[in-house]
Length: 371
Image (cartoon, rainbow, N blue to C red):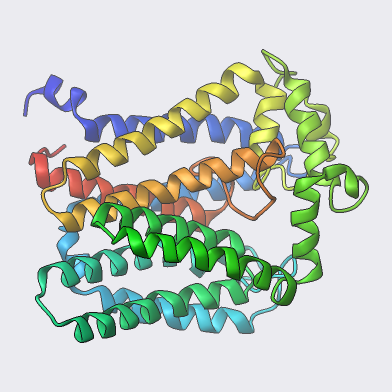
Protein backbone atom coordinates (compact mmCIF):
# COMPACT_ATOMS: atom_id res chain seq x y z
CA UNK A 1 0.00 0.00 0.00
CA UNK A 2 1.36 3.41 -1.00
CA UNK A 3 2.47 5.33 2.10
CA UNK A 4 1.00 8.65 0.96
CA UNK A 5 -2.30 7.00 0.14
CA UNK A 6 -2.50 5.83 3.73
CA UNK A 7 -1.58 9.28 5.09
CA UNK A 8 -4.23 10.97 2.94
CA UNK A 9 -6.94 8.46 3.85
CA UNK A 10 -9.92 9.34 6.03
CA UNK A 11 -9.10 6.43 8.33
CA UNK A 12 -5.62 7.78 9.04
CA UNK A 13 -7.01 11.25 9.76
CA UNK A 14 -9.52 9.78 12.21
CA UNK A 15 -6.79 7.95 14.12
CA UNK A 16 -4.55 11.06 14.19
CA UNK A 17 -7.41 13.24 15.42
CA UNK A 18 -8.13 10.80 18.26
CA UNK A 19 -4.47 10.67 19.28
CA UNK A 20 -4.13 14.47 19.32
CA UNK A 21 -7.35 14.89 21.31
CA UNK A 22 -6.22 12.24 23.83
CA UNK A 23 -2.83 13.98 24.12
CA UNK A 24 -4.45 17.34 24.93
CA UNK A 25 -6.82 15.63 27.36
CA UNK A 26 -3.97 13.83 29.13
CA UNK A 27 -2.02 17.06 29.64
CA UNK A 28 -5.14 18.80 30.93
CA UNK A 29 -6.02 15.92 33.28
CA UNK A 30 -2.50 15.78 34.71
CA UNK A 31 -2.77 19.42 35.70
CA UNK A 32 -6.42 19.40 36.80
CA UNK A 33 -6.01 16.35 39.04
CA UNK A 34 -2.68 17.34 40.60
CA UNK A 35 -4.02 19.24 43.62
CA UNK A 36 -5.91 16.17 44.83
CA UNK A 37 -3.89 13.47 43.07
CA UNK A 38 -0.16 14.33 43.11
CA UNK A 39 0.72 10.70 42.34
CA UNK A 40 -1.07 10.92 38.97
CA UNK A 41 -3.21 7.84 39.65
CA UNK A 42 -5.95 9.38 37.48
CA UNK A 43 -3.56 9.59 34.53
CA UNK A 44 -2.36 6.03 35.10
CA UNK A 45 -5.94 4.72 35.04
CA UNK A 46 -6.68 6.79 31.96
CA UNK A 47 -3.58 5.40 30.29
CA UNK A 48 -4.63 1.82 30.98
CA UNK A 49 -8.11 2.57 29.65
CA UNK A 50 -6.58 4.11 26.51
CA UNK A 51 -4.36 1.08 25.84
CA UNK A 52 -7.32 -1.28 26.31
CA UNK A 53 -9.36 1.05 24.14
CA UNK A 54 -6.77 0.93 21.35
CA UNK A 55 -6.92 -2.87 21.44
CA UNK A 56 -10.72 -2.70 21.40
CA UNK A 57 -10.66 -0.23 18.50
CA UNK A 58 -8.38 -2.47 16.42
CA UNK A 59 -10.56 -5.51 17.11
CA UNK A 60 -13.78 -3.59 16.35
CA UNK A 61 -12.31 -2.23 13.10
CA UNK A 62 -11.16 -5.67 11.97
CA UNK A 63 -14.62 -7.25 12.27
CA UNK A 64 -17.18 -6.70 9.51
CA UNK A 65 -19.93 -4.54 11.01
CA UNK A 66 -22.54 -6.82 9.48
CA UNK A 67 -21.50 -9.40 12.07
CA UNK A 68 -22.46 -6.99 14.87
CA UNK A 69 -25.84 -6.50 13.29
CA UNK A 70 -26.40 -10.18 12.50
CA UNK A 71 -25.72 -11.24 16.09
CA UNK A 72 -27.14 -8.12 17.77
CA UNK A 73 -28.89 -10.21 20.43
CA UNK A 74 -25.55 -11.55 21.74
CA UNK A 75 -24.73 -7.97 22.76
CA UNK A 76 -28.25 -6.79 23.57
CA UNK A 77 -29.23 -9.46 26.11
CA UNK A 78 -26.10 -9.21 28.33
CA UNK A 79 -26.35 -5.41 28.12
CA UNK A 80 -29.97 -5.56 29.29
CA UNK A 81 -29.04 -7.84 32.19
CA UNK A 82 -26.26 -5.47 33.29
CA UNK A 83 -28.63 -2.49 33.15
CA UNK A 84 -31.00 -4.35 35.47
CA UNK A 85 -28.30 -5.52 37.89
CA UNK A 86 -26.71 -2.09 38.19
CA UNK A 87 -29.94 -0.78 39.73
CA UNK A 88 -29.19 -2.87 42.81
CA UNK A 89 -25.73 -1.40 43.41
CA UNK A 90 -24.83 1.24 45.97
CA UNK A 91 -25.53 4.75 44.64
CA UNK A 92 -22.68 7.10 43.68
CA UNK A 93 -23.67 10.78 43.63
CA UNK A 94 -27.32 9.70 44.03
CA UNK A 95 -27.19 7.46 40.94
CA UNK A 96 -26.92 3.68 40.56
CA UNK A 97 -24.89 3.66 37.36
CA UNK A 98 -21.66 1.87 38.30
CA UNK A 99 -20.35 -1.58 39.10
CA UNK A 100 -17.40 -1.20 41.45
CA UNK A 101 -14.63 -3.72 42.01
CA UNK A 102 -11.60 -3.92 44.32
CA UNK A 103 -12.97 -1.45 46.88
CA UNK A 104 -13.99 1.02 44.19
CA UNK A 105 -10.58 1.18 42.50
CA UNK A 106 -12.12 -0.14 39.29
CA UNK A 107 -15.58 0.90 38.13
CA UNK A 108 -17.63 0.05 35.06
CA UNK A 109 -20.65 1.94 33.73
CA UNK A 110 -22.84 -0.38 31.60
CA UNK A 111 -24.89 2.49 30.16
CA UNK A 112 -21.78 3.63 28.24
CA UNK A 113 -21.44 0.44 26.21
CA UNK A 114 -25.25 0.28 25.97
CA UNK A 115 -25.17 3.30 23.67
CA UNK A 116 -23.24 1.40 21.02
CA UNK A 117 -25.35 -1.74 21.44
CA UNK A 118 -28.60 0.18 21.03
CA UNK A 119 -27.33 2.04 17.98
CA UNK A 120 -26.40 -1.27 16.30
CA UNK A 121 -29.75 -2.81 17.30
CA UNK A 122 -31.70 0.16 15.97
CA UNK A 123 -29.80 0.13 12.66
CA UNK A 124 -30.44 -3.62 12.27
CA UNK A 125 -34.21 -3.33 12.65
CA UNK A 126 -34.57 -0.15 10.59
CA UNK A 127 -32.81 -1.83 7.67
CA UNK A 128 -34.83 -5.01 8.18
CA UNK A 129 -38.11 -3.08 8.02
CA UNK A 130 -37.09 -1.34 4.80
CA UNK A 131 -35.95 -4.56 3.13
CA UNK A 132 -38.96 -6.67 4.14
CA UNK A 133 -42.28 -6.34 2.38
CA UNK A 134 -45.10 -6.56 4.92
CA UNK A 135 -48.69 -5.46 5.47
CA UNK A 136 -49.53 -2.31 7.38
CA UNK A 137 -50.62 -4.42 10.36
CA UNK A 138 -47.38 -6.40 10.45
CA UNK A 139 -45.34 -3.23 10.01
CA UNK A 140 -47.15 -1.65 12.96
CA UNK A 141 -46.38 -4.73 15.07
CA UNK A 142 -42.74 -4.60 13.96
CA UNK A 143 -42.48 -0.93 14.90
CA UNK A 144 -44.02 -1.69 18.31
CA UNK A 145 -41.49 -4.49 18.92
CA UNK A 146 -38.60 -2.24 17.91
CA UNK A 147 -39.95 0.45 20.21
CA UNK A 148 -39.93 -2.04 23.10
CA UNK A 149 -36.42 -3.25 22.29
CA UNK A 150 -35.16 0.31 22.35
CA UNK A 151 -37.45 1.67 25.05
CA UNK A 152 -36.74 -0.91 27.77
CA UNK A 153 -32.96 -0.24 28.00
CA UNK A 154 -33.52 3.51 27.82
CA UNK A 155 -36.10 3.25 30.61
CA UNK A 156 -33.62 1.29 32.73
CA UNK A 157 -30.99 3.98 32.12
CA UNK A 158 -33.45 6.67 33.19
CA UNK A 159 -34.17 4.72 36.38
CA UNK A 160 -30.51 4.98 37.47
CA UNK A 161 -31.18 7.97 36.97
CA UNK A 162 -28.97 8.96 34.03
CA UNK A 163 -30.95 11.40 31.91
CA UNK A 164 -27.79 12.54 30.12
CA UNK A 165 -27.11 9.13 28.59
CA UNK A 166 -30.80 8.76 27.82
CA UNK A 167 -30.77 12.03 25.89
CA UNK A 168 -27.65 10.93 23.99
CA UNK A 169 -29.43 7.86 22.69
CA UNK A 170 -32.59 9.78 21.80
CA UNK A 171 -30.48 12.21 19.75
CA UNK A 172 -28.69 9.33 17.99
CA UNK A 173 -31.95 7.53 17.13
CA UNK A 174 -33.57 10.70 15.80
CA UNK A 175 -30.58 11.26 13.48
CA UNK A 176 -30.77 7.64 12.31
CA UNK A 177 -34.51 7.91 11.67
CA UNK A 178 -33.99 11.10 9.66
CA UNK A 179 -31.38 9.41 7.43
CA UNK A 180 -33.46 6.24 7.18
CA UNK A 181 -36.35 8.24 5.75
CA UNK A 182 -39.04 8.47 8.41
CA UNK A 183 -42.45 9.78 7.35
CA UNK A 184 -42.58 13.50 8.09
CA UNK A 185 -46.07 13.05 9.53
CA UNK A 186 -44.49 10.95 12.29
CA UNK A 187 -42.03 13.77 12.96
CA UNK A 188 -44.96 16.12 13.55
CA UNK A 189 -46.58 13.60 15.87
CA UNK A 190 -43.26 13.17 17.64
CA UNK A 191 -42.90 16.91 18.20
CA UNK A 192 -46.48 17.10 19.46
CA UNK A 193 -45.87 14.14 21.78
CA UNK A 194 -42.72 15.77 23.12
CA UNK A 195 -44.56 19.01 23.87
CA UNK A 196 -47.17 17.03 25.78
CA UNK A 197 -44.77 14.72 27.63
CA UNK A 198 -42.23 17.39 28.60
CA UNK A 199 -44.38 19.13 31.25
CA UNK A 200 -45.77 15.76 32.42
CA UNK A 201 -42.22 14.45 32.90
CA UNK A 202 -41.15 17.63 34.68
CA UNK A 203 -44.01 17.72 37.19
CA UNK A 204 -44.54 14.01 37.86
CA UNK A 205 -41.31 12.12 37.13
CA UNK A 206 -38.35 14.40 37.82
CA UNK A 207 -36.93 14.49 41.33
CA UNK A 208 -36.59 17.86 43.13
CA UNK A 209 -32.84 17.95 42.45
CA UNK A 210 -33.37 17.37 38.73
CA UNK A 211 -36.02 20.10 38.57
CA UNK A 212 -33.60 22.42 40.35
CA UNK A 213 -30.96 21.75 37.69
CA UNK A 214 -33.34 22.92 34.98
CA UNK A 215 -34.31 26.05 36.90
CA UNK A 216 -30.66 26.85 37.63
CA UNK A 217 -29.81 26.35 33.96
CA UNK A 218 -32.36 29.02 33.10
CA UNK A 219 -31.07 31.29 35.88
CA UNK A 220 -27.81 30.28 37.68
CA UNK A 221 -28.15 33.20 40.09
CA UNK A 222 -31.33 31.61 41.43
CA UNK A 223 -29.20 29.56 43.84
CA UNK A 224 -25.59 30.86 43.61
CA UNK A 225 -24.36 29.02 46.70
CA UNK A 226 -26.29 25.82 46.01
CA UNK A 227 -27.36 24.31 42.69
CA UNK A 228 -26.05 27.26 40.70
CA UNK A 229 -22.62 27.21 42.34
CA UNK A 230 -20.97 24.76 39.96
CA UNK A 231 -21.96 26.50 36.74
CA UNK A 232 -20.99 29.92 38.13
CA UNK A 233 -17.54 28.62 39.12
CA UNK A 234 -17.19 27.01 35.71
CA UNK A 235 -18.01 30.26 33.93
CA UNK A 236 -15.48 32.06 36.11
CA UNK A 237 -12.83 29.50 35.13
CA UNK A 238 -13.61 29.80 31.41
CA UNK A 239 -13.45 33.60 31.57
CA UNK A 240 -10.27 33.69 33.68
CA UNK A 241 -8.30 31.77 31.06
CA UNK A 242 -8.59 34.58 28.51
CA UNK A 243 -6.50 34.08 25.34
CA UNK A 244 -3.45 32.14 26.51
CA UNK A 245 -4.56 30.68 29.82
CA UNK A 246 -3.23 31.00 33.36
CA UNK A 247 -0.78 28.17 32.80
CA UNK A 248 -0.77 24.49 33.72
CA UNK A 249 -1.00 23.87 37.49
CA UNK A 250 -1.82 27.58 37.96
CA UNK A 251 -5.58 27.84 37.40
CA UNK A 252 -7.25 29.39 40.45
CA UNK A 253 -10.60 27.61 40.12
CA UNK A 254 -8.94 24.35 39.14
CA UNK A 255 -6.10 24.15 41.65
CA UNK A 256 -8.08 25.61 44.56
CA UNK A 257 -10.80 23.00 43.93
CA UNK A 258 -13.56 25.55 43.39
CA UNK A 259 -14.30 23.81 40.10
CA UNK A 260 -16.57 20.80 40.58
CA UNK A 261 -15.78 17.50 38.79
CA UNK A 262 -12.76 19.17 37.22
CA UNK A 263 -11.44 15.94 35.66
CA UNK A 264 -14.79 14.68 34.37
CA UNK A 265 -17.86 16.81 33.67
CA UNK A 266 -16.04 20.17 33.84
CA UNK A 267 -12.68 19.27 32.32
CA UNK A 268 -13.30 21.74 29.47
CA UNK A 269 -13.61 24.61 31.98
CA UNK A 270 -10.24 23.59 33.43
CA UNK A 271 -8.71 23.53 29.94
CA UNK A 272 -10.11 26.98 29.17
CA UNK A 273 -8.74 28.36 32.44
CA UNK A 274 -5.25 26.90 32.35
CA UNK A 275 -4.62 26.54 28.61
CA UNK A 276 -6.67 29.46 27.36
CA UNK A 277 -9.11 30.29 24.57
CA UNK A 278 -6.72 29.23 21.79
CA UNK A 279 -6.23 25.65 23.02
CA UNK A 280 -9.87 25.32 24.09
CA UNK A 281 -11.00 26.41 20.63
CA UNK A 282 -8.49 24.09 18.98
CA UNK A 283 -9.89 21.19 21.01
CA UNK A 284 -13.44 21.97 19.89
CA UNK A 285 -12.28 22.17 16.26
CA UNK A 286 -10.54 18.79 16.54
CA UNK A 287 -13.60 17.17 18.13
CA UNK A 288 -15.93 18.60 15.49
CA UNK A 289 -13.53 17.50 12.74
CA UNK A 290 -13.76 13.97 14.13
CA UNK A 291 -17.56 14.09 14.03
CA UNK A 292 -17.47 15.41 10.45
CA UNK A 293 -15.20 12.52 9.45
CA UNK A 294 -17.67 10.07 11.02
CA UNK A 295 -20.47 11.63 8.99
CA UNK A 296 -18.23 11.38 5.93
CA UNK A 297 -17.87 7.65 6.57
CA UNK A 298 -21.67 7.43 6.81
CA UNK A 299 -22.07 9.27 3.50
CA UNK A 300 -19.70 6.90 1.70
CA UNK A 301 -20.72 3.66 3.46
CA UNK A 302 -21.26 0.65 1.23
CA UNK A 303 -24.82 0.05 2.47
CA UNK A 304 -27.57 1.57 4.55
CA UNK A 305 -26.72 -0.43 7.64
CA UNK A 306 -23.21 0.98 7.77
CA UNK A 307 -24.57 4.45 7.07
CA UNK A 308 -27.05 4.29 9.96
CA UNK A 309 -24.48 2.97 12.45
CA UNK A 310 -21.97 5.68 11.51
CA UNK A 311 -24.66 8.36 11.72
CA UNK A 312 -25.72 7.11 15.14
CA UNK A 313 -22.17 7.04 16.50
CA UNK A 314 -21.32 10.41 14.96
CA UNK A 315 -24.41 11.97 16.53
CA UNK A 316 -23.56 10.35 19.86
CA UNK A 317 -20.19 12.12 19.81
CA UNK A 318 -21.70 15.40 18.60
CA UNK A 319 -24.26 15.41 21.40
CA UNK A 320 -21.59 14.70 24.00
CA UNK A 321 -19.48 17.58 22.73
CA UNK A 322 -22.35 20.06 22.55
CA UNK A 323 -23.74 19.27 26.00
CA UNK A 324 -20.40 18.98 27.81
CA UNK A 325 -18.90 22.16 26.40
CA UNK A 326 -22.23 23.98 26.60
CA UNK A 327 -22.83 23.24 30.27
CA UNK A 328 -19.42 24.65 31.26
CA UNK A 329 -20.56 28.00 29.87
CA UNK A 330 -24.18 27.85 31.01
CA UNK A 331 -25.46 27.07 27.51
CA UNK A 332 -26.76 23.60 28.42
CA UNK A 333 -28.10 22.00 31.60
CA UNK A 334 -25.61 20.20 33.82
CA UNK A 335 -25.62 16.45 33.18
CA UNK A 336 -23.05 13.73 33.75
CA UNK A 337 -21.98 13.61 30.10
CA UNK A 338 -18.19 13.35 29.61
CA UNK A 339 -16.17 15.04 26.89
CA UNK A 340 -15.08 12.29 24.45
CA UNK A 341 -11.43 11.20 24.79
CA UNK A 342 -10.78 14.03 27.28
CA UNK A 343 -12.76 13.48 30.50
CA UNK A 344 -11.33 10.89 32.85
CA UNK A 345 -13.21 7.61 33.02
CA UNK A 346 -12.30 4.15 31.83
CA UNK A 347 -15.81 3.18 30.68
CA UNK A 348 -16.11 6.33 28.58
CA UNK A 349 -12.65 5.98 27.02
CA UNK A 350 -13.15 2.30 26.22
CA UNK A 351 -16.61 2.91 24.73
CA UNK A 352 -15.43 5.83 22.60
CA UNK A 353 -12.46 3.86 21.26
CA UNK A 354 -14.64 0.87 20.35
CA UNK A 355 -17.20 3.19 18.71
CA UNK A 356 -14.43 4.80 16.66
CA UNK A 357 -13.21 1.32 15.71
CA UNK A 358 -16.66 0.37 14.42
CA UNK A 359 -16.75 3.51 12.26
CA UNK A 360 -13.25 2.74 10.97
CA UNK A 361 -14.44 -0.76 10.11
CA UNK A 362 -17.35 0.68 8.13
CA UNK A 363 -14.92 2.88 6.22
CA UNK A 364 -12.48 -0.01 5.59
CA UNK A 365 -15.24 -2.14 4.06
CA UNK A 366 -15.83 0.62 1.52
CA UNK A 367 -12.26 1.65 0.68
CA UNK A 368 -10.52 -1.67 1.20
CA UNK A 369 -7.66 0.22 2.88
CA UNK A 370 -5.65 -1.59 5.53
CA UNK A 371 -2.90 -0.25 7.74
